[in-house]
Length: 325
Image 1 (cartoon, rainbow, N blue to C red):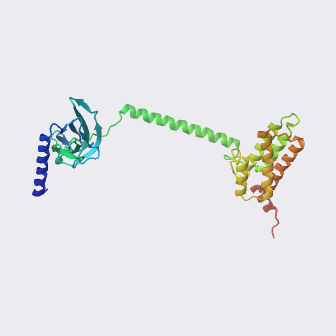
Image 2 (image 1 turned 60 degrees about the vertical axis):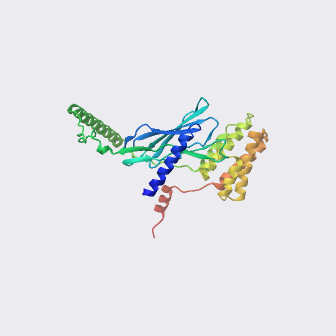
């Protein structure tokens, strides 16, 4: 800061101080800090108090103010107090600085509007405050101590841990030996293959089991069509991997169109599912002929869309049976 800046700063400070004295009956601004000497990084509470006449309009200083090199960490506004026709307001700023040396919190400007100011705001300034921030390394009480040596387990705890580890290893070895003995006695493979059945075979068996229940003869049409719908939906999940059990009929048909099925195949599935929906939700009673027609639609769809594949063992056997040229 050059001499000219110093000169302007002290002129403004003198004018603001003079205005504060002359206008003491209107408004008075004071500033204070709870600590003037701190260690780098410490937090300081900077309090700004405004003592004004009750008919005076004051602009709230706000929390985004300029406090020089200090960083505002928190902001608190106290409840205004009214006494003898005057209002006292206090604003607390929790601030901190991350450098060492002497720092000045600049004069805080407060804008106010009085009845005789022709609608123009006037300013009054608080006094500047000086804070000294010192380094913790320069603290005579901050002694540098040696690093603590490694913490060693007592001999008893160490011996107990080694014994426990040895027992666990022994038990694990015995368990593995017993498992290996049982497997060697069985003579079978350790890993067994799982045969995945085609979706159309599962659907056919489920249809045969459904027809064997004679639900239609017992008058359980709704139960019959509900199970028939579930069989067809499970087939769709196993064949086309769509979430048919959770989707509506229209959503299922849209998924089949995305899978690019033939129109006639989509028509089989749509008619079968719609017939099931009519009985389940609309209390429609199609009779035995209608039930037979719906079952045939489901069978036609399954037969038209089944996925045939040959097991690996069958392909290998066929290759071995071919005569060599």
